[in-house]
Structures are given as C-alpha cells and as structure tokens.
Image (cartoon, rainbow, N blue to C red; front, top):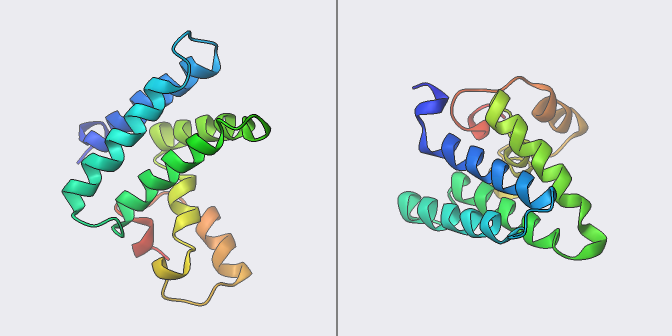
Length: 133
C-alpha cells in the first residue's frame, strides 16, 4: 500500500502542519497539534488494543515529547519534533520509532553501539522497524 493511502501518514502530515503553524506563531499555538497527537494515541490504542503495541508506543512518545516541549527550557524539542515529523512524512523515516525500538521491551538483542548505529543508519523499511532490528 502506498504510504499516502495510510491513515497514519495523514495523521503525521496534519500533525506536522499544525506543529509548524504553532511554531510560526499561529494564535492557537500548540493546542491543536497536541489535541491531534492525543487523538492519534486514542485511535491507535483502540485499533491495536494495547498500549504496548509499537504503533501506540510511537504515538505516546510523540505526545510526551510535545508536552515536554511546552516547558520553556525544552521548547527546542518542538523544532526537533518538526524535523522528525517531516522525515516521517517525506521519507518514511521515523526517528521516534527508531529510538523506541532500542528500549528493552522492544528488542531481542543486547544493546550495543553497533545496534544503535545500524538502527539509525539503515534505510526506511516497510512495516515496523522492530522487524528490522
């Protein structure tokens, strides 16, 4: 299936647009982006039926990262998040998914520098990054 045909791609595109609008000074600020991120968590939580499902973990991580960026010392998080969202939409490369794939409950191999490097260097894969690590 073409990535544009997936609902997840449209969610990420909309979140990226809302995040960019919030960062550019839109009067509504970050509220719509945070709201859409929360909707994604709920949608994928219901669809996957478990908060431990990897698509749900990615969306929870995204929402937590966005909320953390509301604290002024961490406001730069939103710029990093915008770059990551753009990578996900344009290249199918999701830095959040790659980071989360390294957590102990998401990997089957020991954590090594080689695993970390290969996780971030390998090109995008079809399906879950978990199947590639």
